[in-house]
Image 1: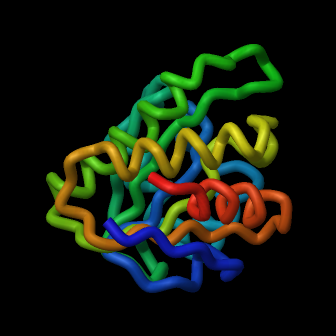
Image 2: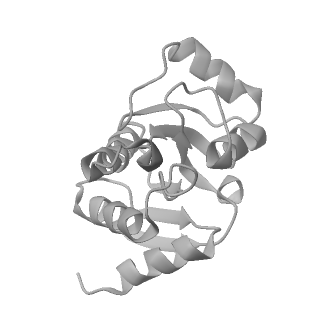
Amino acid sequence: MEIILSTADITTVPAGAIVNAAHHALRGGGGVDGAIHRAGGPDILRELIERYPDGTPTGTAVWTTAGALPADYVIHVVGPNYLAGQRDPALLESCYRNALRIADELAVKTLTLPAVSAGIYGWPAQSAAEVAVRTLLRTTTSVERATFCLVEPRLYKAFSRVLDQPR
């Protein structure tokens, strides 16, 4: 899998699917989640309410169509809230593995992703980057290209450090 780092707004990068860092209630919110809902339009929220009335637990992923976004699908992952004590890296890894599983089910070859949990949920940037890159590279998938949209310089630097390391 090719991993690309970008500073672009995740809602503007064409892909088969956009990965959304969602709240477990799946009703929109702030950060990446809010941006995706605003750019994608109300159809995404309507679909989430209809298909997932009870939300989804931390570490899991669900999907919807992408509304007005430059993608076919949105894969909503619920990352662990580090600041609330959800500090098990396996939960964060599970988000990425489940996103790839759904991407394969939907025959998606390209993904755009945020640094799940590294924003308002407070996951340390270097650890978030290590978990994300390691999981994408070690998970068997048909996804060919993953573009991380990292608008915060600290996240871009952390992901760059991880990708610069020998594998």
